[in-house]
Image (cartoon, rainbow, N blue to C red; front, side, top):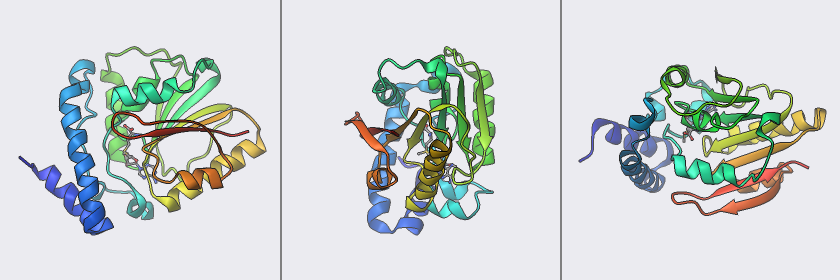
Length: 232
Ligand SMILES: C[S@@+](CC[C@H](N)C(=O)[O-])C[C@H]1O[C@@H](n2cnc3c(N)ncnc32)[C@H](O)[C@@H]1O
């Protein structure tokens, strides 16, 4: 049976992207919802990350709300496979950032590794507040030296210094993605360092390559594919 959130998400997709995209999107959404029930992430870790939120239900997003994807989380098994693709890196030298972090699940999972910092960025203040509450409730392992969330549009986000692992679960469309990639490129040009980009459900891989990133490895995933890029 469909609930009110399901119907709202379908209507929001229909208004934003038209009937064909709305049906495809809703099929993915419904499958993801089934997996959330089976994985029981929140029951296992004391958090609230599973409930999906339609982008049209969020306030204070600004103009880029029109180029944004609804909140739903990455499955734990999918994130683990994507991060593992980096191989044997020294986590302590890197800051991990989830651009479009929503309720913070991926940041919490990344924090199981000894990253210098695990950071989540989302333009919805309401989702960032849930993410901050989730940090205090989370019962999983935390080895990162700091776990932080910022309420900020990814297109306006100031790229921090140091080596970076950037994660994105297809959070935004081509306009915002182009600006995010340009900001990353100018940051690494200004201060050369290691940069890995993990793109889960990569809808616009051509934009990443056009920005000058090199493709390292791709995987098919259980739900969606993923791609890992680097900057050289
Ligand atoms: C598909 S969800 C991914 C959530 C999380 N990264 C995960 O994998 O569990 C996409 C998220 O991107 C956020 N988002 C979309 N456009 C954004 C933007 N311009 N700046 C920051 N966050 C954005 C949405 O609010 C939503 O929480």
